[in-house]
Image 1 (cartoon, rainbow, N blue to C red):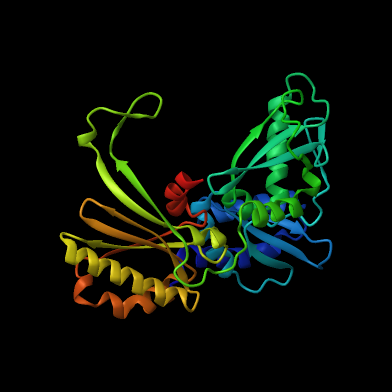
Image 2 (spheres, rainbow, N blue to C red):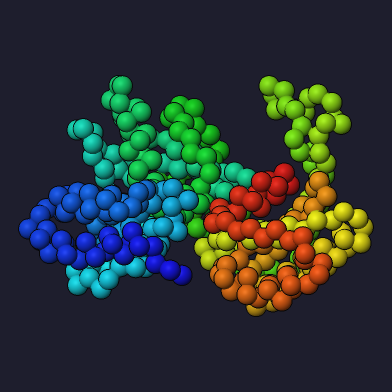
Length: 353
């Protein structure tokens, strides 16, 4: 992959200027570093983290929780030159010491004051938060913002952005007393266990054809104020979706972040059968060596789409290349996008939950 010239220019400028910042406080150092970064790149930032169990300092390239900027953060970190005083890594990691306080404007909140209940949310984990401490009148919104920051630090930037869905605050008197409430300081192992056991994310690759379920959906139909179908049903398009429910086990796995779509025209039954065969053969080529997985197919408006999640886009394209040179692939439209939250899958799989 060709290095983004703006990234190269930033690191060259950083290497030249950073030795002059040695006498700065950490806060001033970060300010200078981010001012320099902003001259070359937008959307990412630098943070300094110390690790109690490791010597030295981590220089974190953060995307500020914006999933679309995760690849840029990874590219910036990967392009870093050897730095004697820093270990450079992409995205804010989980806190190694999740039991900590945070103070703002004279108010202090501890991760033991923030209680968390986990729920399912269309493939992600929803968080309900409540504060088990007294909050000064008029300071509630500020305290909730502090708790939000603390969750980000406890779970880490990747998990909070990708694996967590809705985050809601509930008042102490209104919370669900039947739910399991965990102090934020203890959330890490509880969250990981919930991810595996409650959501079924074992991380193990499915074998064989897997289990599939079918949906008949209407597209482009008018909706009323309550989200129900309205108007003439004949104006809507009907689509058939086949969902690989076995894929759920590896959904959002950190190495399967690229959504690759093979879209073929199916003007008649013969073309439909040929497209299905090609999509199935592609699934076999990717799944056997565990390069990727076919997660759904969609037939709509005279075309058949197959959605795969793959670890290495270049290797997946190389693996599929001979297949896509066939005559039945003449109408192929091949697209890809970074989708670590598997939104392309759960946009449909959520209907089965």
